[in-house]
Length: 275
Image 1: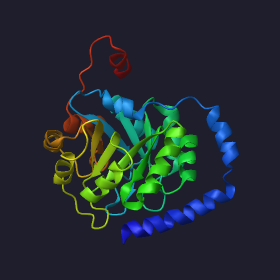
Image 2 (image 1 turned 45 degrees about the vertical axis):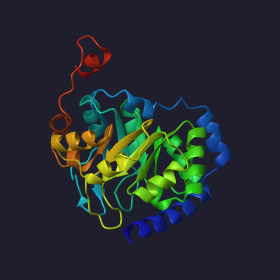
Image 3 (image 1 turned 30 degrees about the vertical axis):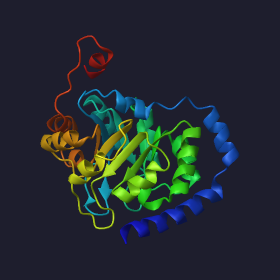
Image 4 (image 1 turned 30 degrees about the horizontal axis):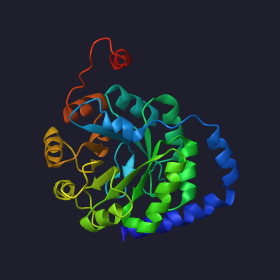
């Protein structure tokens, strides 16, 4: 299966990474780095009051192949920032998404938004690497992490100042996550990672069981303003959107069409930045 194949690839990647990774050196470097930006905090105070936006810098996917041929990560990130995204998600997986850790590092130097390292995290070393390359948060996927492993990786991330977005797809995975935490960021992937089928009702069904103090993020298959209204009505307070934006030549126009216009008060810092 697709997900099993990715995990096997990640295990090999981690083995290679550990051959050159010096934990003591990494800890020393991290200690001298500026604090992370508040990924969760930014989503809890979104620029568009009705819905927070994590906009994704994404070149390709296993199910769709190449999504954006004219792919310039830093330019895309700046366009998202200007369009009023609250946070960015950056694909760092090379083999399946044509991403790169360097994309995240370059974007970190170019924008002021909090960044999520979007990858298949299975080991602590990847979390240390995420912090070093400039991430403010990491994705933890319940489908590939047993409860105790999920707890361990979440603890490591938080010890380094990183927020976590914990991703689920069904009720069983939600039950597993709730053994670890009942707060923070819980992402519902509307795409079944085994079959690639998508259904926005996945968010609405699971939202009924997500604790109110958690911030529910709907991920995948969100294409229109009507989709936003549907998942918001179902309980989502944020969305993660990549492909929909990546397929449009004008990022700002795409974000406005789906999320609605960005209303900034005259004279505010954000208004000045957008000028």
